[in-house]
Image (cartoon, rainbow, N blue to C red; front, side, top):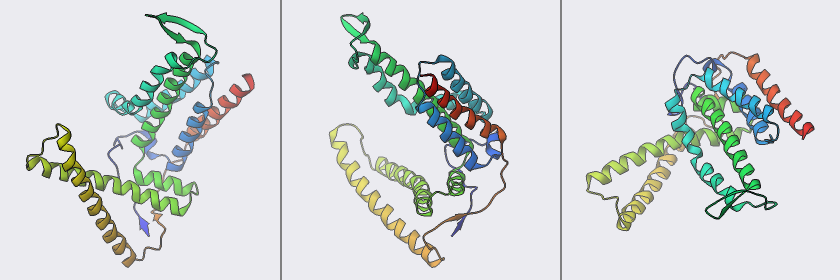
Length: 256
């Protein structure tokens, strides 16, 4: 079954960014290399950390993402930030206290772990924002297909991505219908209607999935999805930054 790759999603930002014209598989590979490098990077060498920061900053610049949009999407890492903020107080390590605030000790080990999480999660999420802003859902699937991911996983991911949007739209309609019938979201009593609506939404989603699957079978679906070929530009710059990021990790391992 052949599907188009031009379908967009709500995270994609339409514009004249050069990243939009590049091969999806190359963007995915580069993102993976840089994220891998950041994840295994120690913070003892400030220069190497600064190099990774410059690489991420460069991709943010060429993606032409609005600053307001960037920080709005960056808020997804708030749970990790909240978790990291508690580490200086609970992660003792060698029990080396940096300083005390109102008899509450802040430990060096926990403080270093907090910095590591904050820096790494921010850089990695920033790269994910760049990828999703410059690549449509189907282009991501297309890129994974070019990277020789399992056809079964390609099909699962493709359907999952499409049905997420379907369920979101369905939930919005159910919510509007509930409000038009005087539903009050406040209090514990409001949870019962939500439970009924969730059950109804699940059943409707299942029935809709069955109808879609049967219609696909009638059109010759054999369990695998092939996306239409499109022409994309290659980029030596992305390959260069992939090599640089991996090189930074290797140097970090050797030095440390």
